[in-house]
Length: 544
Image (cartoon, rainbow, N blue to C red; front, side, top):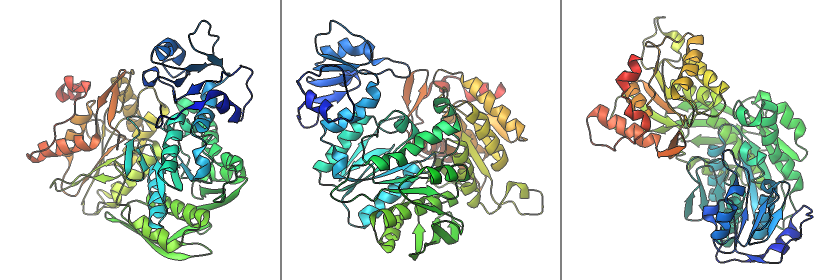
C-alpha cells in the first residue's frame, strides 16, 4: 500500500523495529507494504503470511510480477528475482515494519484504545463525540469505518481490527491531516494477530469480556488474555511530548473479567459501573424508547447525562466514555456529557426502521449470547408488558418481542445453542435463520439452534420457527407482528455482505428490513437483496 509516493530504506526500517534479525537486510527503497499480492504495486514490500485458508507464500511469484521490490516470509525460499527475508513470525513483525515505514505515527497522537466483546463500537463513537465536543482534532478507526477529518473510509465487509499496515496508514493520514487524538477500536483477533502492537496506546478501555470467539482462542481464559494485551501495551508506550496518561478503564459490573483485569493492570486504573462500588457510577437512571437519562457520579463530579441510545448496556458504554475522557484526557465532565448527547446512533446498532407500520422494527448487530440478551431486554422495555412470564396473569398484553437471528458457520459452535436458549427465555417468538453459514450446512446450524430453543421450552411452530433464507425470515417475523410488538433482526447490523460457501453476497439487514416492510405495507421500497437461500422457497423450508 503506497502513501503519497513515499519511499523508505528497507534497511533503515529494520534497524528501527524492536527485534533482532540474522538475515542480511538489503539497502533498497520500498514504496509501500502489502499482504495481498493483488494489492502489490511497483516498489512494495510483500509480506507473505499463512492465513485461515490461503498461504501468502503461494502468491509470492504473483507479487513479484506485480512489482514487489522485496519479500518477507517464514519459509526457505530460493531463486527469487528479488531479495527475500526469512523471519520466524512475519505477522508479528508486520505491525512494526508498517509503523517504521510510516514514521511511527502513533507516537505523534494521543491514542485511546477500546476493546470488549460487546459495545466497543458504540463506546468508541461516544469517546470520539466527546473529543469533538471538547474542540480536539480527533480521528477514529472502528470495525465500521475510519474517520479522518471530513474523510470517512469503509473498513470492509467482514472485518475485525484492520490489518496492521492499514492501521498504520490510517494513523499516518491522521498525522498528515493535523489530528492530535485517535480512538482505535480493537478486537481480540487484532490483539492475537499483533495488528495493533505498535499503536502506542495512552488510554485503554474494556467494555466487557463475555462468551465469543472460543473457536479461535480455545478458551475464555485465552480470549480474556488477548483482550488484556491492551493494558500490558500501556506499559510499553513511549514517552510523548503531549504526555502519557497510561490509564486503564474497566467495567466493575463485568463480574467474570473484573477481578482478573483489576489485578492485571499495572498502570493507573479506574472502573465504572451501575453499582455504588464503582469509581464512576450511574444514579437515577431513566429508560425509554427515545433514549436514556442518568446522573454520572464520582468523587470529583456529579452531572446529568442524556443519550439518544437505548438500553442499560448503553448506560455502561456512556460511563466508560466519560471515565476515559474525563480522567484520561482531562476533559471537563460537562463537556463530556454534551458530547454524549450529540451521538444520534450507530449504524446497525438498535437502528429503528420506521415506514409507517404499527409496531417497532429494529436492526441490531447483536451476535453473541450476551449481546442478544441485552438487546432483547432493551426491546422488552419498548413494550408495555414488562415480562413474557406475565402473560396469562391478568396483565393486559400490549406488546411482544419477536427476534430474528442466526449463528455463523465455521465459528464458535457453542454460541449457537446459547443464543437460541437466550431467545427462548427472553423473546416471545423466535425466528432462526442464516448468518454467514460459509461452507457449513445451514440446515445443520439451524438444527443445533433449534435444539437450544427446545431445551428452554421452545415449541417449534408455536414459539419458534426455522426460516433459512434471511430475507424470508424477516418477512415471516413481520407477518407475526401485531400492533405494539417489537421485531428485532439481530446479528448483521451494519455489515454489507453475507457469506455462503466462499462467496460474499451483498447484504445489508437494514435494506432487507425496509424491503420486507415495503412488501408488508404494500408501498414502494428497495428490492430484497439476493442470497442463494432464496432459490429454495420459504414454503419448502417450513414444510420440512
